[in-house]
Structure formats: structure tokens, C-alpha cells
Image 1 (cartoon, rainbow, N blue to C red):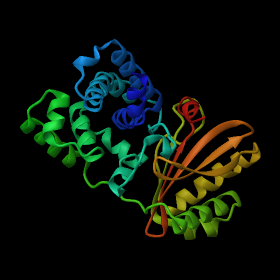
Image 2 (image 1 turned 180 degrees about the vertical axis):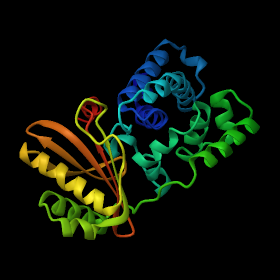
Image 3 (image 1 turned 45 degrees about the vertical axis):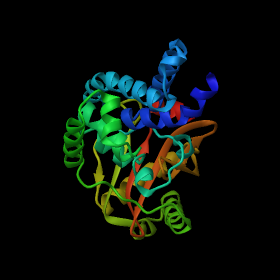
Image 4 (image 1 turned 90 degrees about the horizontal axis):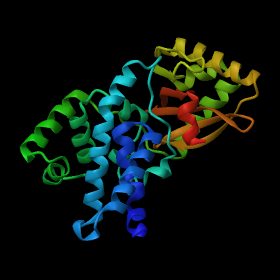
Length: 283
């Protein structure tokens, strides 16, 4: 019955990735779910979708406690693993697209494991409270309370311009100015309160704190791009985590994934993943 499992694989990966923020761990969870699926009597599984969702969610809950302790020791700023948008399944609404953005996944780090599970199932997968209660073996009232607390702790969800030619033009203007050392051009395309985050994981050189404000980000981006230019890194457009991004490659090696956040005709955020462990899955 491999075909039945494979029909749900992408959805289960999307669920596990939103829960964990790690593509590699999400793949491990899906594989563990497959092994459990193989070991089950099919008569004991009413509908594969709900059964797999419950298994994957609970496997993620088991991992989240240890993941939190690991991230508290993380060197520098933590960003989720970059994932090609198409790997995360159909994104039919703006809310579903926003739910895989790096900004949103960083916000989810504020939540307890139970809050995160309820929030992801409700917000990203449109589960009803009765369905969530069945997945987590909790009461509907408890799930409602967890969801309410999660929404308060997450605060206002990030909203970015939907992908399109206009947004692509802004993103391309940014890259042209950045790679060409055009500081005036960078100033024009960046919002006044733009923020740049870098995740090197202590394994490569990266800013360990966010760089804030147009003037500082202009200098920071110009310096980074000059460094990449010296070693022959070339950038190509891609769509990552539901947003426009650039893949920086030095030869055949992927050295960075740069996600560009756009709102109101300006670049408002830059998130650069440089940690080679996180790039290996994308590669």
C-alpha cells in the first residue's frame, strides 16, 4: 500500500516542516511515519490522511522539546531551513503561502510544542477544533484555548506581496544594485526600516545579530556582495518558502540562499541562510 502513503507524503512533509522548521528533520519524521505505516494492520486505519497527520504531529511533538534546547545554544541568529516552494504542496490562499515564510516560522518559535501543533493545524491546514482534538488527544475546549494563546503570542502575522511580475521587478532591482555596488540604487529599493538576518550557525562568517535600518543594511549588503564577488559567487532567481529568493553558487556549491521580503514596493527584509548543514538539503 505504498501508493496510499505516497499520496499523502507531500502534505505530511509540509506539516512536519511547519512544526519543526527543519527540512532534514521533517524528512526523518515522514520516514518514521512510513515505517509505522508499514507495521500497521490496514484494517486498523480508517482513513490514511487523519491517521498519518496524527502520527506525524506526535512525532514532531517528541522532537520539539529537544529542538528548543538545541536552538538555545545555537550560534548567531536561527533561521529555518530553506525549502523550494513547490516541495510544500499546493498553496491556494495567501494565508497558506504566508505560513511557510521564514518570518512566520521564526515567529512560531515563541510557542510551546502543543501551541505550535494546534496553531499549524488550524491556521495552515484549516483543521476544525474537533479534528485537532482527535490528533492531539485533547478536549476541544483545550484546543481552542491553546489556539487563542498561540495567536496572542505570535502577534500580528507577517504579510508580504504575492509573487508576481511587479514584485519580481523590485527583487531584480535589488540584486542588480547589490551586485553592482550601486549604493544609491540600494537606498531606493530598501524600506527605511529594513532588517537583514543571517544564519551561519557558527560554521561560516555571518552577522550574529540583525542589521537594522536602511543605511546600515546598504553598507552590510554592499560588503557581503563584494566578498561574494571576489570568490566568484553567482546568483540565480528561485522561489523559496513562498517568496522570491536568490541562490548563490560558487561553482557547483550552494553557498547561500537569500530570501527577499517585499511589501508596499520596497524590500523590507533579507534573510540569508549560509549554514552549510541547512543548505545541503536544498542542494
